Length: 287
Image 1: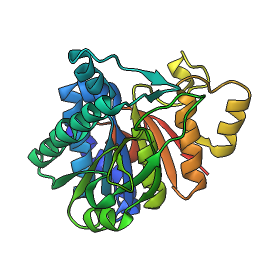
Image 2: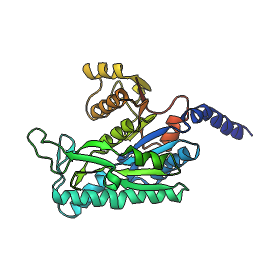
Image 3: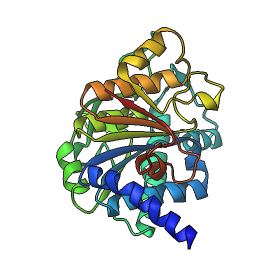
Image 4: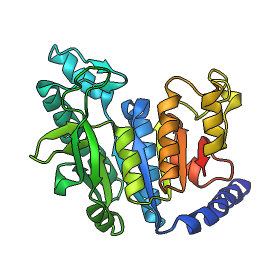
């Protein structure tokens, strides 16, 4: 009997969060190691499906870097990067688009639909969802078909997400002449969250969140303000790979997103644990 009472208590703990988020939009950036593990993928997509069923409007933005690298390597094309961005020549762009929109996107959609959701796969070319322009050279390096976002078609996303559908978005943008652009998935998620005035933006990563000491899990910061982030950047507490993520968090918060979460996507059911429990499992960034 005790185990059933405990399950009931867990559901009751989630109740105020469900009430607060009902009808609200949550943007979920899905990528990293979790995408390489079938069991973890199943649990994350179960979370997304549950969110929709309890009245939340999730929108999924996915990456796919490791899969793109695998295809490029198989074709004997060396992956090249500059300042964290993929140098995308014409041939690489074809592989990027094929991998993201033709394989990964449809795999995610199929798995969500198998769980009882009504997911629909999109990329920036669909109804000009993500209008973009060529990113200028970085440090004198031409990045090729790497895009900078100009606008998001919020009308389409609102129609789908406020109805019964879960949009699943591949980070491909479209130019004025119909050309395709490769865009960083974190950037796409952030810009969509801002454009949609989302309640939450959630980054599923390979780390627990922001730590005071990078190598010490016990120093995880569960809640942090924009002012504290700026202080930690200045004093060197936040460095390395976490720096661009928290910078994106700050921009999202400053432009209207209520909460941004950085959490470990390699933990089973990370979204439910973060959203529907009192303590959460990652770092929540607030105003």
